[in-house]
Length: 264
Image (cartoon, rainbow, N blue to C red; front, top):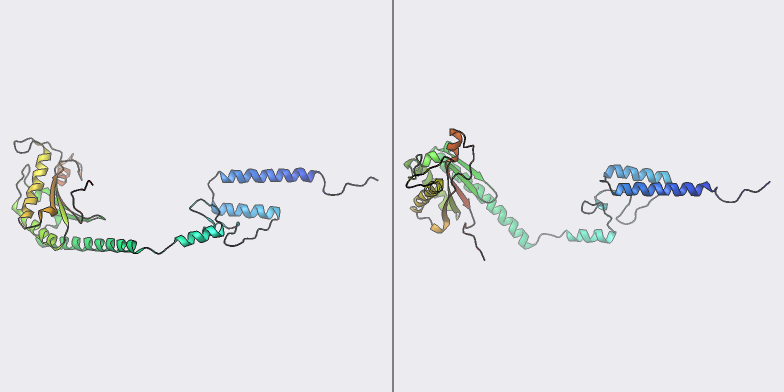
């Protein structure tokens, strides 16, 4: 009887090649897909169990884990222990300059909130809350006043009814070093008179009229400016009477930065 050749049967080599090729194919497919961390972990465990491979983690990196310790900046990349240590060293304490900037921003935010509260209280004293809206933003404070309180339709003359509101706003402004821009806004209805050829002139004249009144209180003129914006910034549709009434308004912008930009 002929002896069987020593070693594994010949078909084992073919099977091993096939299994290896399949593994490489699926790894390539996985690398080109969006990685679902949980699914990948389960797949990796299944492949490991199927091949009877035991993988031990060394140092900070464990190839069977897919948690934050083994992930780079959202790319799932391998970080060697020394690289991970380097990343940890990058998490330094904020510098004195950064801390000072944060404190300054917090101080400015608190000041804006306190000033807005003072403005709302000043408005409440005039009993005109339904005519005025106060908004606080990250760069300053906006006070929006309905145009009907300050001007008659088509007129640029400041109405006496607006004086108490303006007087109280000045008292708040004098407490702080804010810069103020007065914005005049109109609706889209065209105007063409000898005094106001267009809404540009009308809105600009109204803003200037308010500014001139504020100057009578002795406010530094360098802290004040005015601009007419016509109907370019509506806050409501101009197709109906109510919308046009809302768009006819005067807005006050308070900020701690000058409005005149530097060019050098």
